[in-house]
Amino acid sequence: MSFLEVNKMTKFFGGLAAVLEFDMHVGQGQIFGLIGPNGAGKSTVLNTIDGTIQPSQGEIIFAGAEITKLPPHRRSQRGIARVFQENLFFGSFTVLDNVRVGYHLQSKIGFSSIFLNTSSNRETEKALKQKALDVLQFVGLAENASDTAVTLPHGRQRLLCLAIALATGPQLLLLDEPITGMNAEEVETMLGIIRDVREKKGITCIIIEHNLKAVMGLCDRIAVLNFGLKIADGTPKEIAENPAVIEAYLGTEEDAA
Amino acid sequence: MQNSLSLMKGFGWIILAAASIAAPPLLANIYWTSVMNMIVINSLMAASLRTIFLIGEFSLGHVGFMCIGAYSSALLTMKAGLPFGITLPAAGLMAGLTAILIGYPFMRVKGIYFVILTVVTSESFRLLAYNWRSLTGGTDGLIGFPGAGSLSIPGFAQIDFTGFTEYYYLTLTVVSSSLFILYRLEKSNLGFTWITIREADKMASAVGINVLKYKVINFSIACFFAGVGGALLAHSEQTLSPQASSVFGVMTTIYFLVYMVVGGKSSFIGPIVGAIVLSFIMEFTRPMQEYQPMIIGAIAIAVVMLLPEGLASIPAKIDKWRAKSLNPLT
Image 1 (cartoon, each protein chain N blue to C red):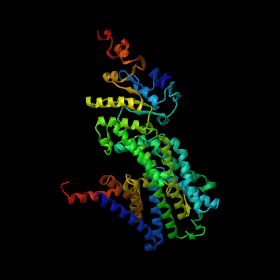
Image 2: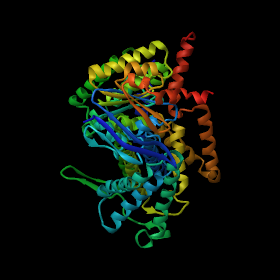
Image 3: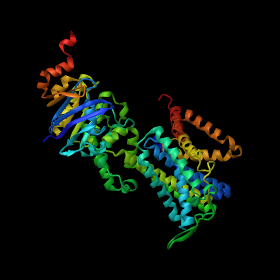
Image 4: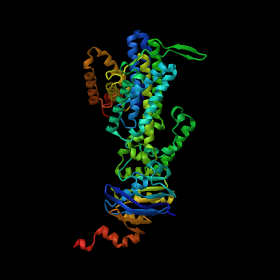
C-alpha cells in the first residue's frame, strides 16, 4: 500500500476546477515530482495534502489513515511538513529561534515551565536547542544561528524554511519550488540536502519544481499536471518521452504553424 | 553599554515600586490615594491589553471585560454575600470564560474585523448592564455594595481593607502579582508560541501549532485580568454605573489603547509607563475636562512621531546618545 494516496481529488474555486479527479500514489522513501505549466494546479494539490485548503471531493490517505478533513496543525502532528513557495518564516526571530518553533510540539507548556525554572525544564530546553543546532548543521546554516532571519540572503532563507520543516520531525516533506530564484551553486547545495533528507533521514518527499533538469535528476517518479488534469505519471525517463507531456510543455506542430 | 541599560531598567523598577509603596503615607490625602488606586488599575488594564497584542491583534473591547468583572464581583457580594477574596478571582473567571466563549468565533477573523467585533461586543456588555433592570439595577446602576471588607488569614492576622490607604495596598498587591504572572507568561514557551503566531500564523500552523486554540488562550488570559481590574475598580468606588459617559464607555477602551501605544507596546513595562504618565496628565488637566481628549491626542501624536517605540524606549535612546558622545567615531 502506498504511503500517501490521493484518490479522485477535485478542488473547485468557484466554478473553476483547479484540480479534477486527481490520483497520486507515493511510496515510502520516494522523491515524487509534481510538474506542469503555471496554473496547472500543482500548489493546489500540495495545499490539500497539508490541509491549507480542503478538497471539494475525493480523499487523502496518509500512512493508512484518512486525513482529508484534518486541519493543518493536526496533519503536522502526524508527520506532514511543508516548505511554502514563498519564504515563510518568523522574520524577527533569530535563525535558531525559527528552528526552535519547529520543535514546538516537543516543548512543554505548563505551570512549571511558566512559573518555576526547574532543572528538568532547563534540561528540556537545552536538549531542544541542541537538536535545533543539529538541524541547522544538517542544512548548513550553523554559522548563521544567531542572525536575524530576515537578514539572510534568499538562498539561505530557503534553507531556513527547510530547516523549520525538518525540525517538526516529518515523515512526509512537501517542497513547493525549493530551488526557485537560486544560483547554480545554491541549487546544487539544495538538491544535495534533499537527497540527504531521503537517504539519511528516510523522509518521503513530494516536490514541485519548474527546473526540469533538477526534477529529472532528483525524482523517482513524476506526475504531470496540465489545466488541473493529470496527463502523465511515471519514471523520469517515461515522462521525458511521453508525447502528451511534450505537447503540454512545447505545444503541437499545428500550434506552431 | 548593555550593563548600564539593564542597570537603568533595574533602577526604574525600584523607583516605581518605592514610589507606589511610599506614596499614600507621604501624600496623606484621600483624593490622591484614590487617584493612585485608579492608576494602578489602569496599569493592569494596559498591560493585559498588550498581552493580546502578542498574538498581533488589537482589542477595543477591553473595557467590556472590565465591566463584566466589576458587575460580577459587585453582584456576588450583594446578592450572594460572598467575601471579596472569592469574588475577585470569580470576576476574573467570569470575564475569562466569556472571552473563551466569544473567542472561538471571534479569533477566526483578524485585524480590523477583530477590532470591530470587540468594540461592538464591549458596548453590548455595557448595554446588557444598562437594560437588565432586575439584576443590575439598569440605569440607576449599583449603589452601596460592600467594599473589600476584612480579609482574615487563619492563624495569622486579620487585615482590614475598608480604608482608602489599605485598599490601595490591596490593589497594589493584586496588580503586582497579576503583572508578574503576565510577565512570566510572556517569557515562557506559551508567550513564544503567541509571538510565533503574530509573526506568521500560516507557518505556525504548518509546524503543528493549533493557532485558534492559542489565540483563544491568550484572549481569555488577557480578559481574565481585565475582569480582575474591574473587580478592583468596583470595590474601590462601591458604585457602578452603566452610562455611556461612565468608566465603562468606549472612551475608556480607547484610553487603554493610547496608554499602550504611548508607553510603547514592544516592551512589557511600556503600557505600565504609559498608564502612569497619561493618568497623571489627565489628573492635572481635570480643570480643563472638555479639552482632555485633545490633550491626550496631541501627546499621543507627538510620541508616535518622535518616539515610535514609546516612552519606554527613552532609556535606550539616552544610552545610545551617550555612547555616541563618548565615542563619536562609532
